[in-house]
Length: 497
Image (cartoon, rainbow, N blue to C red; front, side, top):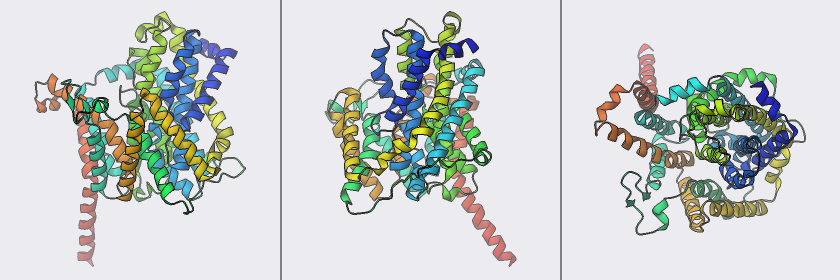
């Protein structure tokens, strides 16, 4: 391990890591451009690099891209990456009430904490955690996703019904395309464009960015709150570590654990951590209104998910997300096979990934702490010019995914959907996360039923699945139980009086 750090601190690797982290932060802060897209576009440049150089550059872009998403998520309610969706719930309200610099400071602090804590698991417990994940089958994955979907009710800032309605609408929009099990088209209405379904990136950009642009365009004379960052250090103190320390630790562990489950991702990690923090809080009503623990939980978890996702990548060769799949491609073009033999045949690569991840988090802290106020100056640009530039990036980002202008039209359509949901006071977070989780839930449920020959009761023999299912049911009925107990308590007090 020590030798791996020495390799990373070679001047060429250090410069590549610095450049990758810096570019990742900027790209992550631009709605419509993601870390996954950046790594995919950079991959051809690594063909003629040394394997260690290539991995170092890509890891830097990964860490910077996920972390940079918090900037516009907080300032503009336009998450730069899908992992930052949950950050908008409390980060943007904080910015609107003049606490943008505080939200940014907490977000950066939580991002670094999440990265360092997950690095500890990555470096010291990779084989153990990877072995634990190997015990999970389709039932476990399905109930885990079901638990996350039920937690959407807790995220809804309005009523429980509206939160579940938003999730159901999001799940419905995930259905068009080719049925992965049967191989037949469904709900495409004869359109070849819909055979691939609605892409996540166009949907995300449309619902969050385009809907916001449409709202701004419809109210040109309305004064909008701006995030004005004073010309001073971001307000964070040692006492914050005591106040938010347990939240950061818990959310980072959750993020790491969820991140190592293939196909789940940082957006689910942030959702689960946010929901857990809210359920454990004594001030549940403050979440969604600009509550600091919400920002801390989200950013700790989504950054910790990176380290968690790297665990199955280097120990089993299993990608935890699309980004890890691209990283596997980067290793493959250098004739390297991720998995247990990577530690034996190419230890400099295996431990190089671990070392690069640790150093990238430190670089991310330095870069964001020193430059976030300058990057945040986009909030000071006149709204018309800023929204115009964002619209251009949105179009480019949607088009670049598949080089198809159909994705641009999809993006615009979901902009109208997002605007309609907001006007109806239906929360956007559950809608998007329901859209993301629905295909995973369907795939795992079908796999589960195929394994058990259609026997639903086979879940009774899966203790982890039962545990997730119990949490899901408890989460769904928890508000009702608390309300019922409160009413009984009120009646008892009245009777005593």
